[in-house]
Image (tube, rainbow, N blue to C red):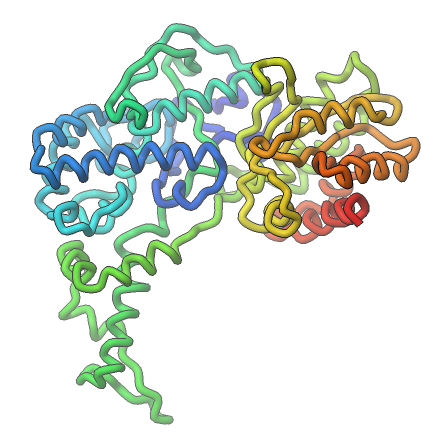
Length: 474
């Protein structure tokens, strides 16, 4: 039974920021360090810095011949059952990191000489050049290293969804880039199915099918060799009927076998090919339909129907707040991630209803910073279940939470407008005074967006929000 069912959240995967795992089974997804390194949300950035810190320490130790110290660091890597990701979770694993695998992994890393020669610069490079090292092992190692980030994320999500936590439990060992060592501490933990569980952001997982030795070999190494043979006009060059020259990839495979020993020797001679592979391997976040069997249109229709039935007023503010959270997650993922409810700022003197990380790399939220030069690493959300229009004090309250570091973009979600033009003018006054951008959305806006949702095409969403933006800024 999945987390959403166990704790009666009443939400589908599309309304949740985390992967809705089953504590008793497997979800065949992976934490991919290369994929994480391409993400721009604050959680992924922090997790990537921790992964880099760990592996840089390994590199430094190996290159200064402190082999025993480096080996000891691998002894802390264990089979991470808490995320319920990967394959054969909770049972003997054929490919993942088990207690007896860590020494073998370290010996394979040394034997490959990938660190000593500079081939391996990041943890994920091991999958390309180290024998008997695949996506399961890479994901397991990454999970161990960033365990504290996952613990903290899990706590925030449990608070967000009112899931009970257990206090005073061990986090398990995790890498601390502050102390540059493994640490273990006490923390609140989520317990499900009788065991500690770590929730993982759905925008931070992948199928690990992009940063692979096969793709590197097939689409970068062989392509480079094709061009080289054409340039040298070698014996492998053939001609088509109309005279065009070509070299088949199959003809190259005999002298350039598909194995990691060849990839090591080739990359040592042609490091730019590896850099091109890294630069051009930038897979998008997984869609909700790739993670679970969901019908976007069905969920969207249901959410819109539930929204308009909620009565106005303080008594039903919690119900309004809860449904809006699910709608915003559905609409804005993967551009907005890692929501935090009732986030304290300024040492607790102020509070924000919801705070999202801006993880966009294109579209409306990306354009806010790149075209309108608005600081928006975080997006502020305020929900008001009022029966009348929001007045200046509420807008001033939200604008007062803006800052250069936190961001200066917010969305006010309310029920309806008595005088929409007046409200837009108030938002324009805030923007003109350079206090920040406040975008108003009412029930009808959310219903319109839900009615036109398309997981594969966000044009309607971006155009709709841009139209409101232009009303305020022009």
